[in-house]
Amino acid sequence: MDIERLVKEQRSWYQKGKTRSVGWRISALKTLRKGIITHEKEIQEALKKDLGKSVTEGYMCETGMVLSELSYMISHLRKFAGEKRVPTPLAQFYSKSFVSPEPYGVVLVMSPWNYPFMLSIEPAIGAIAAGNCVIIKPSAYAPATSAVTAKLIRECFASHFVAVVEGGRAENTKLLEQRFDFIFFTGSVSVGKLVMEKASKNLTPVCLELGGKSPCIVDRTANLKLAARRIVFGKYLNLGQTCVAPDYLFVQEEVKEPLLKEMEKCIRRQFGKNPLDNPDYGKIINEKHFRRLTGLMRGEQIRIGGTVKESTLQIEPTVLEGITPDSRIMQEEIFGPILPVMTFHDLSEVVTYVNRHEKPLALYLFTRSRRSERRILTSCSFGGGCINDTVIHLATSAMGFGGVGNSGMGSYHGRDSFELFTHHRSIVKKYNWIDLPMRYQPYTGWKEALVRMFLR
Image (cartoon, rainbow, N blue to C red; front, top):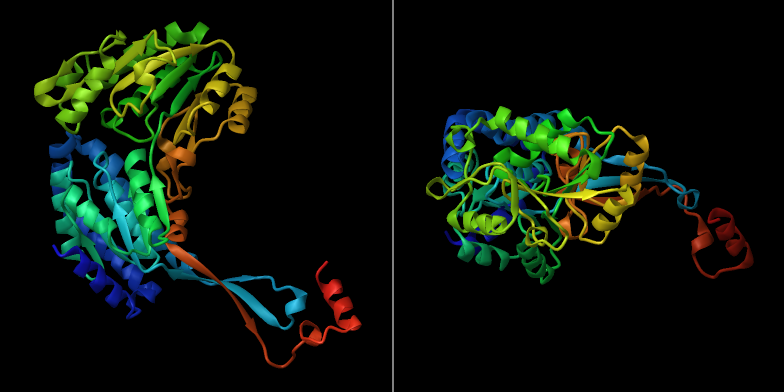
């Protein structure tokens, strides 16, 4: 594919102004929704091939999430896209002031392999809703999902409006050499920095959805049975290959043992006695990632799990204890089904530890103490999170999702997606029947008095 030519074609077509019509955008979103429903089985088969996702997990975490976002955007887009009247200062009498949303133009969406369908299409929904042309670059590590995504988009849209560029590093490099009006990237911190560096050459705004070591904190007041169930769900969903998965567990010393016993029960209950024989239990994306994860486990004290199956690239749900802040596994984001456990005596230790490290994408707190809840929320900075649950905060179109600091910049989902891909023009419409003379020279005394009266 000639990437440079594709970008030029999209820019030329965008300038014709067809995407300015809100009705046209809604029609495009409906076309996409119909296409996804038509190809739902193919999408699921691709997710199974790439990541071993079951039908239920594939729909719950990918296809269903996208369809829900589409429904929300279709229902609310006219409201989002309308001009917003704002108050006008008396000094500007007589005029009206309003904010007018307009699309950026041609947008690049670069998606990762862990949720290859959802994280390709959901940002694109926001870009389309805002009136942009879009180029989607799926991950080469999920080739089956990349292929079905490309097929879906070809059937729904002309390439001068929305297109998919498949391929690997060479295509990524070529895309980042082009001039876009906005770049949306989901992936690792290291690649995010490269994207931002490339974008800076053209002063292109970016949204970076990255990751980091997201803590899960359990204090002595928590409902341990429920905490265990929800931690196991959030951590081992997609075999831990989730950017907002709990990366490590920080549990108050006196409840460590009962919590881990409950977690062991929950793992058996959710995945069976032999998780690697469970047909609904997925796999690690590739051999490179599998070897990195098994290397992180080497030499550590395994409390639960630890069994691996190289032929299928699977690692069973694993919990490590005896972990310290200096342990190797605490030096990088895990992104797999391995949960290291550390303990604390007082919540201040947790606050100190979290604040000494990069701001995480997510934070989870299990507690029944309002005081503990307030302490964490007022003392720690993080992208988003849950009180007494994990990962579900990103499953609503009514709230934005995004990182802060090293875990990313920008927020999307629902209205935030529309806002993200939109430039908001501030406009004053001045009427002609009166023209206050105080701003014009010569500045006589009475003019200064009027200026001071209006502007204080």
